[in-house]
Every structure is written in structure tokens, then in C-alpha cells.
Image 1 (cartoon, rainbow, N blue to C red):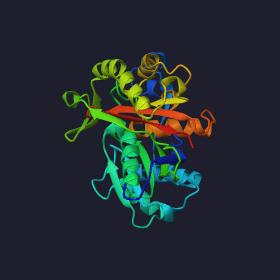
Image 2 (cartoon, rainbow, N blue to C red):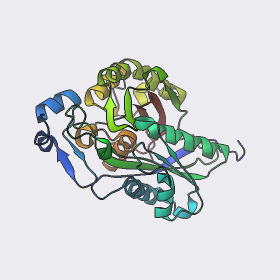
Image 3 (cartoon, rainbow, N blue to C red):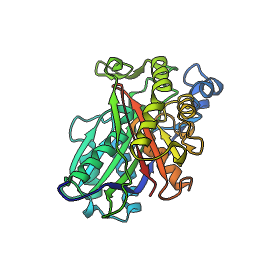
Length: 318
């Protein structure tokens, strides 16, 4: 380690959701569906839909709140990383726009696209950069405006998705302080690369829902358990588990197999829908704001998404 940094920690969180609420009853007026059908299959009651807010607007709003909570200032940040798969512009990237919006001077600014697993990938990337001495303080954002890529005439997909953003600030741990971000467990399943897709010639979200459901409910629990073990944390000592908010049945199925019986399980899917790369930081920030996780307690983050990709780690609640 060129700068002697032993590890990193999360020191601030923030989130942003648009004010427009789209309920299941609203959707029933648009397509052939109803509240009972949606809730029984995916657990969603409502979701937020962006109107005037761009991806960069939502990312900046969440990052600004996380920065304020961290006790740092824009002058302290030298790395901005944004996880998203819904940016409309090829360049400039969203991270550069977030940096400009916050008045951060000359940061490294990159976007990551691993779809719904983007946030834990981004946290790991920021953790590695700080440990290596390439950065000192980082803002990490997960943000999506999935409503731009939703076919509102397709009842199998339009009930699933929402918009929003969540963010954290990472900084180096003090000498002798235990790391607050554990080792990442990440990987991909290339043979399932078409399981979730937004293709250039058909720019709506499509997915093989059943194959993703089977893979997630049978494969993810051991991977999530490995992330806890890599950080030296017993599953029974995990205070909260924040899975990608894809489907309530998937979340509860993985949680049961994981055996984290003492943990609070994030269920933000009910009120926010599937927000892809935003879902983990959005749910985490809301849980912390509600006082559901004690400061210093270990939290397991794990997400999966298009690619098929997955990533997760233990963090300590600030």
C-alpha cells in the first residue's frame, strides 16, 4: 500500500426519489393488471417516476446529501464514481456532471455499468483506489431513470421499475482502525448475459424473469455468505441485509437460505420498485435514516444484474 491505508469506511449516506408516485391502481388504468396480481408476484405497491429530473440531477441530489452527512466538503473529494445503466448521453459521463454540480475540483470521475449490481461494484472500486493511494475520499452513487426504458404497454415489465438514486461517501480508516468495508465477492455468469437486456435496436428493458429467479434463489445465498466470511463476520452477527430490490419473493427466498435470522432485511422494493443500480444504496440510506441499523453494525450488501453480474460486501454502518 503506497500510502499505508489499511482500509476504508462509509462516513455518509444520502438518497433521492422523485415526487411523482405511480401506484398499482394507476398502472391498472394503463395496462391489464391489478394490485393483487402485482403484489402476489413481485411485492411492489408503488414506485417513483422522474419527470423533470435527469439521471445526473438525481445522482447529484443523493451525492449532495451523502456529502453533507459525511462532515467532508467538496474540496475533500478526489474521486466520483457513478453506477448506472440508464444514462442517455454517451459523453460526458454522469460522474463528471455530479462533480460539476457539487463543485468538486479535478476528481477522477468514472461511470460503471453492470446494471443492477453496479453499486457494490462501485463501492469495491472506490475501496481499492483509496487503499492503493490513488484517491483519498470518494463519492459513490447508484442512480437510474428506468422509466425512460420501460415499455408502458407491457404489463409483465412496466409494473417492476422505478427511478431514484442513493449515495455513500468513503474515506480511509485511521491507523489501527478496523476496515469498515470488507472484501468484495464479485463475478459474472457469461452464459446468462442475455437474461436482462436493453438493446440498442430495441431500447426497452427485457428479461428472462424465470431464469433470473431460479438463479438468484438457488445461487446467491452461498455467495452472500462468502462476502460475510471474507470480512470475518458471522452471518448471525449481521445487523442488516440489503439485497438488490428486484422482487420481494427473491429477496425473502435468498434471506431464508442465507440464515441471517437476526438481521433486518431491506424491503424497499414495496415502495420503490426495482431501481436497478440505485436499489441497494437507496434502501440502505432509508434504513439508516429511520434508525433501523446501529452505528458500527455490520451490513451485508449484495446485488445481481444484467451481464449476468453480481457483487457484494460487508460495510459498517456509519
